[in-house]
Image (spheres, rainbow, N blue to C red):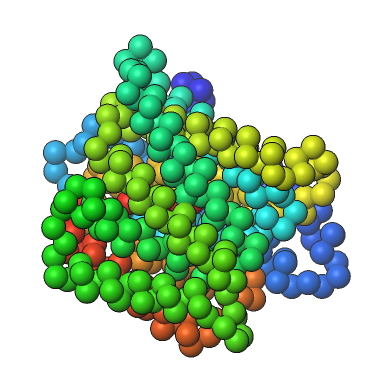
Length: 366
């Protein structure tokens, strides 16, 4: 991989996606316009995301001085906002014909191996200790198996935009867990944010009428967010591999393997055939893997090094808005007044907590 330029695999993947285009259009001759829009969206933005991430020159050490907001940083922010904001609709589309836990396990193992390989180029296995492996295992369980596994199951029962709003409660849970575990003081603005944010969450979970939400699966998403938040707090205290790419890659591989094992025990994996997969589901899965996992994580790491964590944290409240719009436009998901009011409350709570509590800016790609 050392001698292969980034543009080579970018062009190869984009070529593969383009080659599936005619087949997708021929299969969609029944005139289902929303499905055509979904396929075109994922094909176009996957290639754009790959172009952005392969053009980013990731530094190996933290820059002593933060860079100004140049074109590369704005493109990186777009990867986070659009890439991670649309991953919920992509998961919903992928889950139509691909077992969701199986798809999640495969994408995290593949993405984790690539990120770990990047990390190993700058270090070696020799530096890994038992504590490093333990922290990677715990974070893989909390972040991938519990934090993401429940979410990918929920998008089959709850609108992807609503799932994104419920998943945005991670900073609320981080503040609570830090208070209970680390005895960290919660400032008054953060307390107001907790009340407002959880009121909005309650409005979403108990929503009825048009756009009704299945309360069981909505609660599953809320608990998944709590698990992800617990992993975030644990990561701040645990000893992890010194290289960020290697540490993240190990977590993704271990979590992906755990999710895959869970899929074997709960999903019809043995009877699953690739011929069952529609073009839209394929593009949805490719999006979650290439842009949501690889480009998203790599870009977030790069942005944290060259900008401020607060700027990266804008994804926490912009992503749900992007998810809500994409779910409504591409998947035809209903967005009622109650959803908008509850979403505003959740995001207002998140903003208040992030502004009042430094260090609650989790990387929350699903």
